[in-house]
Length: 101
Image 1: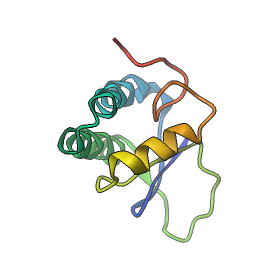
Image 2: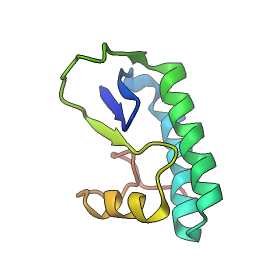
Image 3: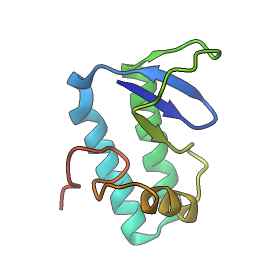
């Protein structure tokens, strides 16, 4: 799986770590539901840190198709909302699993 983090690059990610990303995605969803910018920034930072820790960075000149696009940690609530509204999924940023309640 290839994950693109906006303004950072692409990472090859082993799908065996998806539970780690889904937990981070749940925090993003919680922040979005509360429309809490501070909480969103922290959740995005944690998500991006997980991607960087568990993924393998691709060369900057690599143009592989991304399976998943994650906004940068500085994204606003409105920007993330637009990204979520533009997706065909109700699963949050990480497709394939509904957010946990």
